[in-house]
Length: 171
Image 1 (tube, helix red, strand yellow):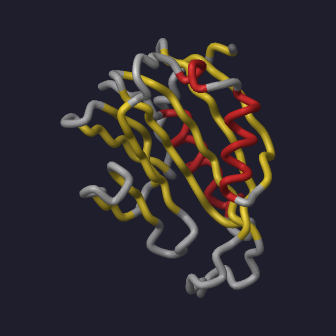
Image 2 (cartoon, helix red, strand yellow):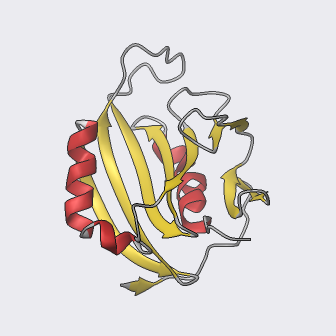
Image 3 (cartoon, rainbow, N blue to C red):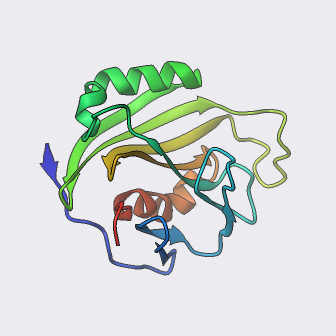
């Protein structure tokens, strides 16, 4: 497992976010609106003001009994393939990394687009690009999901990848 230092360097595209109550931090995309989950299946969501497809969502559920590492849930490939089939998408890449003493499984998917959502800025989009990572800490399974679509991903890739690389489930 590759050891990767925590990304802490802010850019014009990101800003620091600390959730003291739930004990995590990350660099969030600058200018995205913040929504608290209030039981909606996530803890906090940062949503683009401009495009329905662009979000960063942090989730946390109790870890399965006794599991203290993401590796106890399965191999990188088995989890990646299971997640891809659940999404009806394609696993483009995956890697395991260790950052700040936590093991992360990191995935990139290309998923079908939800044609029912209004897309004023990205009518030509045909796929959802999803960056997704999982880790286990403090008795919880944490997920960070950063999504965009294939028409605008390149413009915001730096901020979305920074959100994934900067997440750590402690302050």
